Image 1: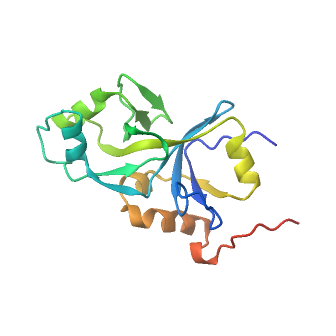
Image 2 (image 1 turned 135 degrees about the vertical axis):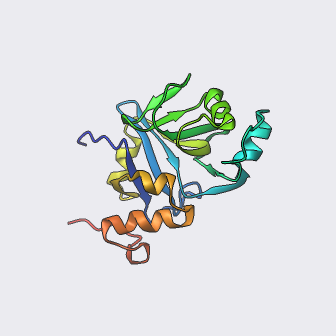
Length: 186
C-alpha cells in the first residue's frame, strides 16, 4: 500500500465501526509515520473538568478561568495519563510538535502553567490516546473503517464536542445518516 501521512487530519469512524472505543468518533491524528500513528478522540467528553483534573494531580489553580473546561476520553491507551493538545506550540518539557502552531504535551509543566494563567491560548485535554502499530491504520483505511479529512483547529478548540463529528462530515459533503455500513468495490 502506498505510504500516506495523516498527521493533522481527522479520522471519521464509519458506521460499521463496532469497536466501542471508536464507534461514532472523530479522531485527530497527532503523528503518523512508519512507526505507526497516534491520535486523540475529540468528541467524547468525560464527566470531568479541568478543575477536577488539577485537584487529582495536586495543582492549585490561581484562576478559575478554565476551571469548567471539559476533559475528554482520548482513546483506550494510557487512560490514566493526561494529554494536552495546545496552540501555540510553546516550549514545554515533553511536547510533540504536530505542526508549527499545534503541539501535544504530556508533561505536568503545561498544567501548572494553565493553572497559573500562563498556559497556551487554546487547550484541549484528554485522558488516554489512540494508537496504531506500523501499517495498522493503513490497513483499516483499506478496509473502509475510516474516512479522512483535513483537520480544522476551530473544530478542536472552539466547537462543542457534540457538533464536531457532524461538522467534519459536512466538510466532506456528506451526513453520517447517509453513509453505508458496507464497503463497495469497483
